[in-house]
Amino acid sequence: MSRFLIHGGRPLKGRVRASGRKNAAVALLPAALLAEGPVRLENVPDIADVHTYVDILEAVGVDVRRPEPGVVEVDASSLAGRPAPYELVKKMRASYYLLGALLARTGRAEVALPGGCDIGTRPIDQHIKAFQALGADVTIEHGVVRAEAARLRGARIYLDIVSVGATINAMLAASRAEGTTIIENAAKEPHVVDVAILLNAMGGRVVGAGTDVIKVTGVPRLGAAEHTVIPDEIEAATYLMAAAGTRGDVVVEGVVTKHLEPVIAKLHEAGAQVEYDADWIRVRADGRLRAVSVKTLPYPGFPTDAQQPMTALLSTAEGTSTVTETIHEARFRHVDELKRMGTRIRVEGRTAVIEGVERLSGAPVQATDLRAGAALVVAGLMADGCTEVSGVEYLDRGYERMEEKLRTLGARIERVEAAVTA
Image 1: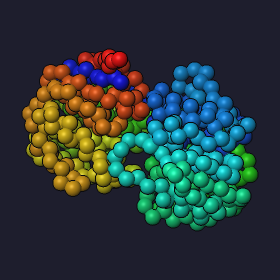
Image 2: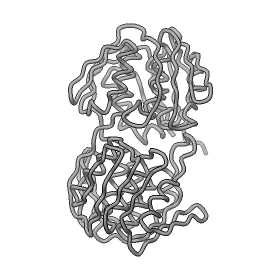
Image 3: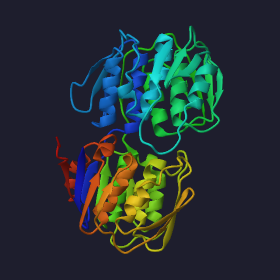
Image 4: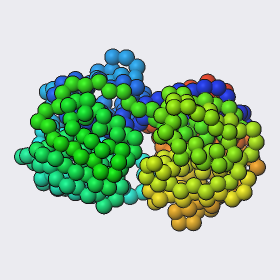
């Protein structure tokens, strides 16, 4: 167990590069199982969730190599189809992508119900609906999902809710089904598009990714390919918010600026100075920000994963801000920790009402999930005195060398390993 010690109150200044996107990498790795040949992924972030997925792939009989930093090579040519170990699957939500990939590749999948951050109920009913529409028999017994199909056939799938996971899983399963599958009310997130690009590079036929209707024409075989993971816009958003909150001047490079348009808009509305081009964004702030209202929505709306760091940023904005969470019902668990630092926030249903204070004060706080941890780090950088953030293992799941990157921007942050007791 590790913790961060942050001595805040210093403006962040300099340049930092965004790593590969976490949510894309953990979908692309299982997608590589569909290929009967090696798949090379570049710009893969060095994070705990990627390490866990590599362990899962090796456990199900896949050859995985990491020849250099940022590169993962997956060769599932001799996929054994063994069940994924529960002790690994329970660590991450994205393990459910194994269902669609293994079902399409071997006709059978057996995966324990996934784990991950506890941010509210996240059922997989839409995933199951998609598999059943394609002709699979799906059962859940003793916490294990089993899907089987002698032959998958294309179908029309209407998702009752916009679900990134169900959209990607339906694409994976449909990629090798007989005929054409139409996925309606599909998620539009950038990593949905990234998965479609990889499938097409492997010889798949996917069109419409990035819109609410995706057409997948199944092919009998997918082959070797190379692909570069898109940049992580949530990591980039976190550093941009930290820059604004510390009244600093930071350029985040290696981004797809279009993916960050709602974050840019809210930072600008709050009074930060924002400049950007296609692949970089600069944020400056030389004073206290203004209160704004934020509402999370599916892409291209304001991302739910950026909500918690945004709540921390607005805690010192002048006036009263509101942050409404429409995606996950339990995503304000960081608020009680922020209150330890002097914030004035009350939660009313799915809305946090934030009365801005002049300054925050350092305090010991506990991360309850990945993005809550990011919020506490942003608050710690803004606060006077020392903030001790426990639960750093959550941050390691989605941020590559976070403390090192922040130190390049002038932050005083160090990782401290907890003492082992007998």
